[in-house]
Image 1: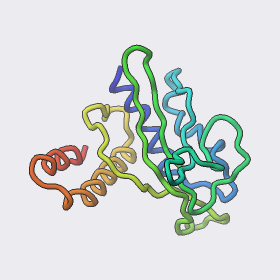
Image 2: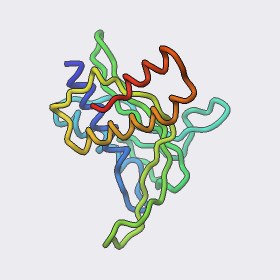
Image 3: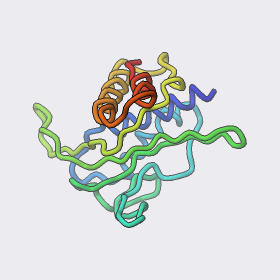
Length: 175
């Protein structure tokens, strides 16, 4: 069950990481993306999916957020928001996959007619490869994990050596 649940949380994390959304979209509109795989299994988590991040220990800083509850604040370029879906099996284990990301205005979609935003990741750490059930990831999701791990390794490897660097190499191998 833990592998299945971790993979469902990962699918939600990826969906939110890769989404393109129209200018004017609020975090409330995007929350369902992070919960979809869990909802399809009759599961959910009882916390917000994302929140703004401040400085000086202001870790939950608005006005932006990604949550089921209504928020009238549209996501704007440069806003930082967490991407942290989770699942908690009471008395057994909890899963949360969390990164910080910021809102960007990527290149227009070919043939698109409206301004679209997206997210870029700010924080990088390996995912728990041994908890990923490959049978439940799409080809695109596997490619995302592999590209993410390649970036994690590229950003961190030259700052490490010895057994820690060896661990990072193994943790970031393609799925």
